[in-house]
Length: 43
Image (cartoon, rainbow, N blue to C red; front, top):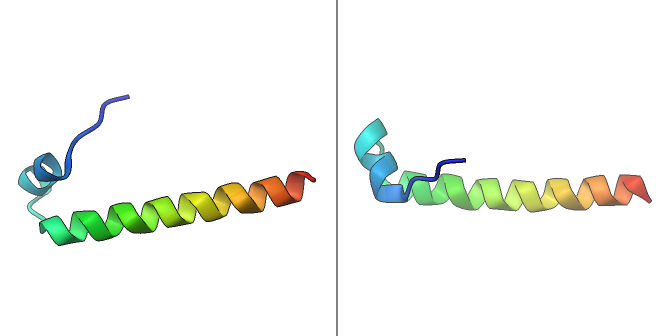
């Protein structure tokens, strides 16, 4: 799996740095919530 830093994403897609940071934060929060929900259902 390849990873890119926020500067590479900004340059490639032409979005602002703050937009990338907000998206990453939202993704991390939703992923953690998803992990929590799936663990609860498994019990």
